[in-house]
Length: 151
Image (tube, rainbow, N blue to C red; front, side, top):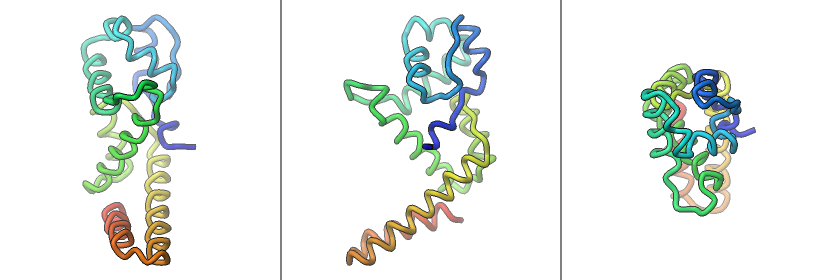
């Protein structure tokens, strides 16, 4: 299961109430993306929620794909966002706090920790494969990224 399947709307009930419909808790659910990013639905949200939804749309849904927001790019951008927060030295609890402040999203700290651990293990595998393949530059890049995530 991808980390984006474990990212939830922080004020799910409040948002559902404002939209006067039920919506999934998962922020990256197709139904959630469809409901939140239609203009008429956005207008029903209070000002603070509108701002966070617009920030989310600007940062993660900025894509020219015809199938946007269902093209996979929002999830990729969000994963990059989580990794950048870790590279800044934030731990799982702080990452959860920041994404709550930035986008009114939440996740369990354990899920973030597991994602970060999996990311480090993936970079270790990339580094090993690059060494075996005789690509020292790729190995060096993977090693550098791994150290940035591990500190």
